[in-house]
Picture 1: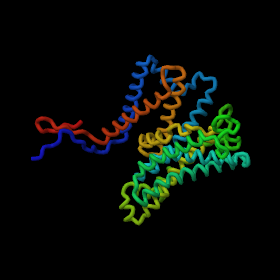
Picture 2: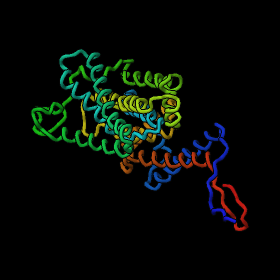
Picture 3: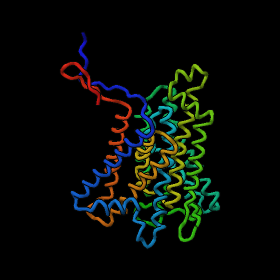
Picture 4: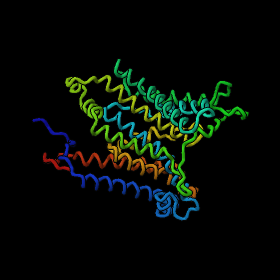
Length: 374
């Protein structure tokens, strides 16, 4: 008789929504408590630090609207990138190239701003920058998809390598002072990015002292459009079928290669659009333009289980962690602003652990041969 293994992983019956919510909330609470212990070790009051972090230090601030404006600058790119990556992940195309596609979109939009910014009115200029970002990011992403469709290359490795190609291209433009480098400030003695003309900067709608960034409105419309596309449109259904089983999709008469190319172009184009929005809002290109949004977007998409509404909520929470920690750390010099990345990693690890135990149970074989579930 074949002996059973000491440990076995067995799939549970589908857990209800209350059970899943309780597991994930417990994981987040455990991560926050872990962060509190780390803060105590460094001599920081966790309640005060978390209070400033989760409120973005708005209470008591002389200019609270500026905190919200800065929050939006970080939230919009993360939201759009996370939604775009979820599109590819739903089709089981592991697009890890968000960083590179964001950079290429930002570069294309910046080139349009520096070349045409003095010639076009602001609304037209912003539209041109958005289209340049869309096309740049989309073409950069569809290159990897084309190789995958044609020769079956590994998209994870390819999109990862393309990230570094885009990063080195950005560094080349940042460090090369030459007459043809249109991104640099010609009045500076050393290489330095030039600010965009006024017409190439994002439209801001004044609401009292607060200025509403129109990229937030665009991101909201984009969320609604993607929700409808994935849930009700034929293209969304095709993404789900190809992600579930390419063989079944082919049997049903679907052009799998064409669907992959179309979807990855859309995914990468939206990431490029996020890059265009970011540089337009900042009004200048920078060597650290991505703020690691391509990597963080992967975390957000998976934490939200590729759900559109879940991505909105998760993006908002992660941005609170990032920006709120930066804000709170100004009151505590002992805490680095990167503490948010540590807390984010702990949350991800514990949420993934909670997800594992919601879906599976571990069966342990005892000495008497009987099995106990955990």
